[in-house]
Length: 257
Length: 257
Image (cartoon, rainbow over all chains, first blue to last red; front, top):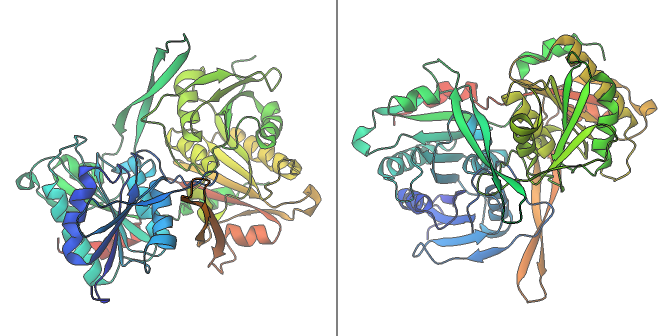
């Protein structure tokens, strides 16, 4: 293996056994040396969680042929941290996360383990991208997602990176490649989940809850990820981790504390 | 209880049994009707994790005298969602999270369960603040933190809120109230954790890891939270959940995909 080949770290949140990560490995394997470090069990909705009060395990898994692959017992962000500190021979040239089974557009970016892995990559100075397909089914059609994953990864490797401190949130509409109308660079739509909880009684007579929710998009803008996706375009949102609300600073400076 | 009294939701990530949340309840109890919904076990580092593949429990806890208090089996964000959907009589006028045992300044905002609870509040349209004391000890001196928690909460309730879509990340230096020099409105410093992992062998001969890390502040700015805290000032950073890196959009629009 030439030392000049780009080193690509692949991770996800649906676990190493999902179709999505297999598709992502296939999509980028021609672009460099691929190493997979992914959770050993589903970690959807883990956000930017890290394991600070428990132990972590790493195990090698021979499931992608010649490509080196490891599971960890941790979250997606744990996977990125373990990969950099303990698995990879050097800092990777690219981190790709996904392909997630389900949308990570708009507000979902903050709950998503897929995107938190990409954000962690950006924090560590690695050009990073999360890919998500708007199809939850285990055997979804990943062809369009694989094509954009390949094309975006190639572009980043040829460009030598992304603007400093940013990663990308790429969402792909459900359907066949022929149904995709194109690619749009977008902002995150203003949306949230209207939560509800299913109330049940366990066999011991005690109550418990399952989280439910309805996605509400309040954003009428035509430059949002939700608008692009609803018109069968792939959405790409540049994402950063400086959460400072700069526009609110002057308001707060009027306070007397 | 008058219906005109503000309704205040208190939560945290160190669990309902920590000194920090007890201090926060005391700090804000004179300002309105307080209801506590907090994790039943420590949830530090849980970021914006939500429980979507498991069940959740709610239990009433009589540990704050007349103040209604509930534990949940979930993460800090689960607590906020459960509180709004299942516990509170109406949307609260204020959400306060903490007082965290340990810093949530700069990049820690994305790993912090304390701050993720506040961000979730903002997503739900509730004026929300996370408070964190730069002292990990279980019996830390919370007096300065209690004073700023009271003062900020009072200001928000009198102001009828915060700028739309923002919450506050308030960090308090370690020490007595007399050692605090004042309050600064700041931006999030550019910093990260240089991770390492302690490698050990379990009794069965198998390896495992504990996460370690060294905090690295790369930011020389004098308008950052790290600068304020290192000079014994309380830092307040307005935080939002629109992660769009607007400055990167024009760069990406030059790509041909």
